Length: 441
Image (cartoon, rainbow, N blue to C red):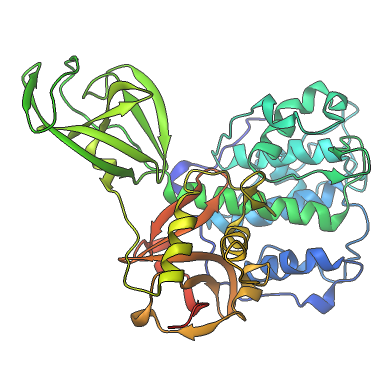
């Protein structure tokens, strides 16, 4: 059996777009208040298979149920019906969704030839399935052991689940369980259906936005390499490329941009900068590349993926401008689901909640509820400091703070963190549902 990977071009059509809910909240029982917003969002996104109707969400999720959830999501976001090569992999099941999940590499069976669809999942087994789900859609998140340092039981994670656990924590899919002793991963503990569904939703949204924004940052130019040089306002020539010295700031506009030793895609990679990063520019190359200061040294980036830095438009009340400027100071901070402070990181509504809270404004905590704060304003009358909302119908699943000139600052997703985006970007333009003004003139 050959493990199949969803092709990139199919994965690139991922949409969080408006979908008609197929289930009502009343069709479920046993869920906690904290899960209700996630449940509503999964319904809006049509992420729940019809067979889940009537489930008691306080029960543990099974291996078979997780397969069905993952395959349903992959077929929806890729608009591609997966056809299994065979159906006889296991002696105890030939369920369509289990066979598909197995061929996609999302799950595996047991050495005795069984799958055991009704067995429950431990949390570390679930973490592994989440990593496999991402890989099946050709998204390859990178593990980082440092992200487990704050969990008091990280040393109990099985070796086979180490990488998956690091990924799930790093990208904000898993927050852990708070105890009197400290935050725990509880890798061998059970996974409640509502816990699994909430973590899966975070992974789905991360994967979704990743593929919407991912771009190839390399361009084809002459493969010469050169050295640095030149002062502000002066022209220098490096291997026949004229560089005009400038002193300005520019902003990265792609998900991840390579920083190189020279103005060529074939030169050495010195590092990577993320969307929204503030670059100190020292020169503009005639071939389209940009010379910058990177960690105190001269380096280069492709000019195709940078733009003049967006400053806050000051055409608004003084207090609103002050809050917008304050929010801009967090560009580059990490996205953490449920985060609402600089020390923990932010999710979208957490950033808004924190920034306004520091100036004495008490807002609701989640995006959809924040639409009840303040006064509604039209798109044409947006001012700096207004909250801009995105989602489907009247339900908001994302929020940011407008900074003027068609731009807003927001905690975007785990791969991009806090950044500046344009309301004109297709992803946001098609999901814009309204705005609210908190500070009135």
